[in-house]
Image (tube, rainbow, N blue to C red; front, top):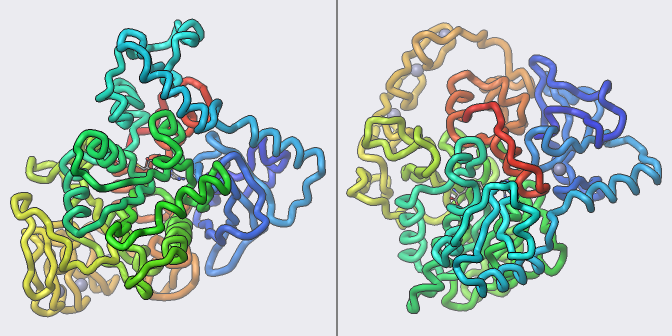
Length: 508
Ligand code: SAH
Ligand code: ZN
Ligand code: ZN
Ligand code: ZN
Ligand code: ZN
């Protein structure tokens, strides 16, 4: 988050005092607090540096959405008093950093766009914008896609970010197989409304079917920070939303759209499906999702009084304990979610690495049927579908593998561990053979408690600094997946300014 980077120009004159990520330090998220100052991405979040279980230094606010201060450099000390002039300047800055068109304007533009003959339908790849003929001149030096077909308009996730830019600017889009699996599952479970939070491709699949197949009765609403999507969807199909601070950019009217959507009729059950950026702060996400759940609950629901809004939270398996901390009713499914633009995480069968991304849900695991033809089987004892390689451990009395490989039971650790691990007597736990032993007498660096290292400290947010402190292994995986620090910031540039999409140096 921007929090890791400290102050910037927009924060106003505190660069020197900024809490830089000193080695060994970690940042803890204190959360969204009432009265927090705002950046262009809505209310900022409160952070503090922690070390050995103690807060160190002053608390400060930083941008909720941006992982790099180059993208949003908002910074303010909690106890900082701002002059009237600076407050006014900030307000103006926030106003100026909103998208060039409103959602309404974009909808009107779209209505005019579809009236154009194919030969006049152009899309500017540099500005990521549908163009009307009067605007062609302004974009004459830009890369333009011509003859935008109705099919292309139905698949904005393919139109946005052209192929040659995929590597740097990609959002992590579901492979068709995974997307279809999710939709089939949702339908077979009897849901008729899908709240898509950061899942534009699932939304697109639903919208596309709804516009083409008469008997297709599923509806969806997309909540996403990527405002480019407002060019393709009306106000009742897309809400500009920040899932790290539960902020609806369009104000109360947009909030109301979401509320209305969550109001389920008797036979129009709602499910929420979310696939947040993996580098994101789990507790910030959890807090927003709880607010969405509360919105669902507020609406009358005959026969569902004591229930939670059903949810699929798509996230890597190594976040299991963090997610369960916030949502004890959730369980992790073995299904491996694949992405189109992640060569490394295509389906495992080809001998490549398998995807570490899973579905966490509060629905009963026994209801989640996984495709046998893709190598999943039903474990009668666990009453759930598991990966074929996931053997039932008699001692643990469950199918214990998290990554699809067969795990082995360690009688000293009293649990199953990865096949590549061995029991280390010095560390008193299982680890890779060539690990460097850590002293066991020292407690967690962050909270001071024993039983875990700082990399898995429950009081920590996965901020940039704490991620740096993580075990190398996990960091590598994170990087390969979709932590998207650099990606997301490239993306934001495309969303919040008309600046040309730049190539960011970092790989994924
Ligand atoms: N697999 C999904 C896309 C997941 S990528 C699919 O194919 O549909 C993460 C998504 O979250 C992107 O759409 C991105 O725009 C969105 N996102 C990133 N940061 C966000 C934020 N702060 N608030 C809301 N949405 C966000
Ligand atoms: Zn911001
Ligand atoms: Zn076991
Ligand atoms: Zn062991
Ligand atoms: Zn050891």
